[in-house]
Image (cartoon, protein in one colour):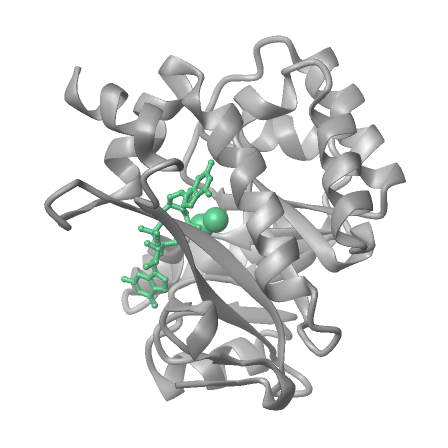
Length: 249
Ligand code: G
Ligand code: G
Ligand code: NA
Ligand code: MN
């Protein structure tokens, strides 16, 4: 298949890059973290969306090399600057269940001189909990390195509650569909219920997809810890990220 072949040469040909989207602390109003998002170009320059290439990379195993590349790049191009806040990196369950993954992360940290407490790994609840004992062991190894573990897109998959039961996430990201649907009484009730569920379990809460000032005010009213979305900032390359002032352009 085309994409599978492209993924094999992507790193060598400079076709992959990372963009960074700010995450704002609701109380302080400051950008306290950024999420790293992978971008893939075809040879003609056309962008391939992650929804297309990540599943292929997971199926072919290319995600392992891409994932190491992403962590190394985050450490080298962003975290080398002491002023940069926490960076969250998406990590596939395929990576978590591959023996030696935590050790490879430790090696990258050692080589780049970055401490693990400046990284968070986002895990999407989408995939099934197959082989979860390996995943749990890997997660506890990553935590020993100081890396925070976040649950991404909470509320969209079937496995979310199992993940919540098995893993002590630092932060849970509530999928943006919940905020978007809160214009109706039923949607608002759902959003409040999911916030209560996450909060009662002691996790910090990040709400995704914040696009308006009204939504920011609502999140403050609900006591949400962190927000992310186009109203806070769009994903931009590292060069556009003015870390020292925590400003995006
Ligand atoms: O980039 P968008 O901004 O379209 O990203 C959509 C989704 O793609 C993310 O929420 C995440 O689940 C996935 N994604 C983006 N970058 C990465 C990555 O580096 N690794 C993995 N595993 N998934 C990613
Ligand atoms: O799976 P993950 O939640 O990490 O995906 C991030 C994706 O969400 C990226 O594709 C990003 O471009 C998109 N995104 C980020 N903020 C917003 C927003 O405010 N509104 C919408 N519609 N999409 C957003
Ligand atoms: Na994510
Ligand atoms: Mn998400």
